[in-house]
Length: 124
Image (tube, rainbow, N blue to C red; front, side):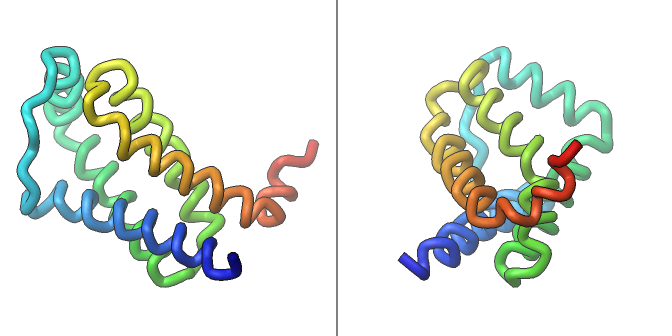
């Protein structure tokens, strides 16, 4: 049980490092998306900055998690991305929902492990 936080951290770090890097290097094939999902992704891509920003954050957070540095901060930066990945798949592309659920579970577990780091920002 003592190794569970490390395993969860490494898994989450690998997921975001690999998929974030894929946003720049395109080494994984992109499956076809339903119309709504494609329109949403196209709109984000059309801004010219949103996808690079998201992917840069994913790579950075992945490195932080893999290096076991600033884990609580990395999880905080990752929270809106995790929520959007989950909602994107739940609403627009449900066939891809299993991985976002795994991401959410890992993220919530690690946030619980590091809960003491969040107490100062969650006090009134």
